[in-house]
Image 1 (cartoon, rainbow, N blue to C red):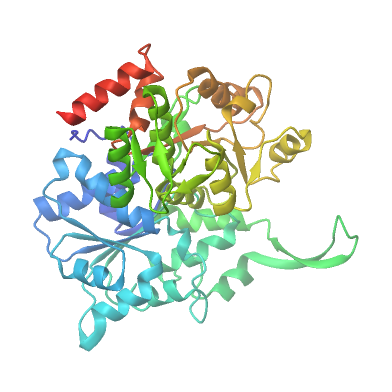
Image 2: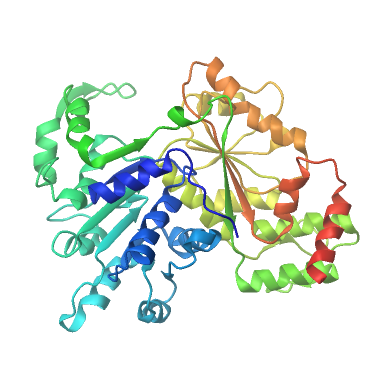
Length: 469
């Protein structure tokens, strides 16, 4: 367990949320939004003695893992009780019956929550709402729109007294995305009481000739004055943490995303680690003949699938890392993302889970399309994205889906979009490196190994010995 030492910009985050009460905190993934919120909530509940609970909303993995794990990670927050309201209806109901300071739930279950906590005339219990990855609320409309956000709209201003939107990308697809999120902050005071009023004030339509078909079409446009006016109206209730103000852009911003293996997958992983053999749910057998083979098999299982029966056939075991990647893509909100994979089974599963993704292959048109911004998600094996490739024009976000020992391959794919290339290309933007790491697996050993000279077998054997003890 670690001591929470705020980063230089986090006290400003905390002070902003405490003073504004209803507002927007715009900060990218890995900049400490969650821990700043937990520090604020710890002060409210464990120092000031508040009793009315807080509701945290987020995507499923964020509610199930990110917030509970972050609360458990820091010594100072141990007095703060947080319950994850996820799973089946009965599991969610049981979680709500627990007494806690904070309840974390995924957006998908908002209609269920509103019905559950207000039935039989009961009062909505949550004084404060923190909407993590708040772009999920962008489709809210006062008369139509998303069902989930509409359910929340019933209580957003009648009972909830404090509201914080958290996101790193408040307007991923343009300024129109802002109205739905901002409505939950101020009921339309700043951007218009209805979406139609918002749209009429700052947006319009005009006839334009389509570049491909040559036809004249009616297309939406943004009025020239819209950007400056909207920013001015949100200034008093919004705080933006710009990495360029706090980080050396010559170094990447590193974010280690830990995932928890499901119970069944964890049992099979430990069995493989202990006996060098396990039988998977569908009957496939995974066997390692030596320590080197064992590390490879363990890394496969940590990623979510393993090759069975000594063949090229693989069997899926869990999707924890796929869920984590989905959260990163949602946070990126349309910004291009480069994903590094190692095993062919990982690529097959990535392509199935994210069909809009494209594999980096030998076709030079693939790189051209990526650098031109036409590929939102690119899957690349580090060995195929080595010396000479320029990928920096396409994006600045790299996710390591799985971990592997080869330091040179790791450094080479980082360099493809790295800070030096970004600056040389004239881009004043940080590079984000996200590492998906399965907790308590060989993944963490690989992370340590890449910065040391120790042998693979030595690290593995030490880990097994430590676990046995």
